[in-house]
Length: 107
Image (tube, rainbow, N blue to C red; front, side):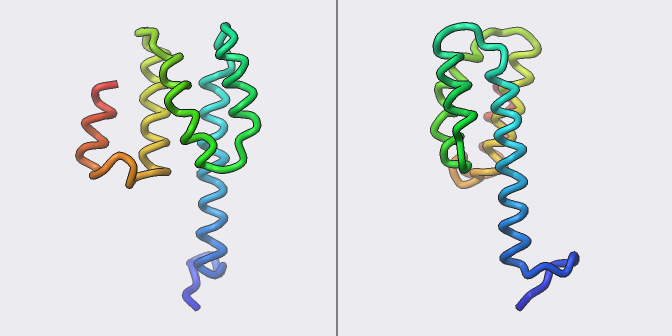
């Protein structure tokens, strides 16, 4: 079979890369929910901690982004980071790269 530059079979390498991307996305989601004060924040923290795969986080994106409505720089930066991570992990969900970059610019 095809080998990646590190000598791992492509499928194993792809699984490792996929897992690494999920861990990074989960860490970003955890940072996004860590300072939410209200009951919904506590619920989101619990849900994000329990997430086991990217789809779990994908399903939480709406409620999480809805809680990050404040228009301060830190919140805008976090929203933009979340959109970038979601776009990289689920590119087909946002359509073309052009559409995605326009969406990220609006945030």
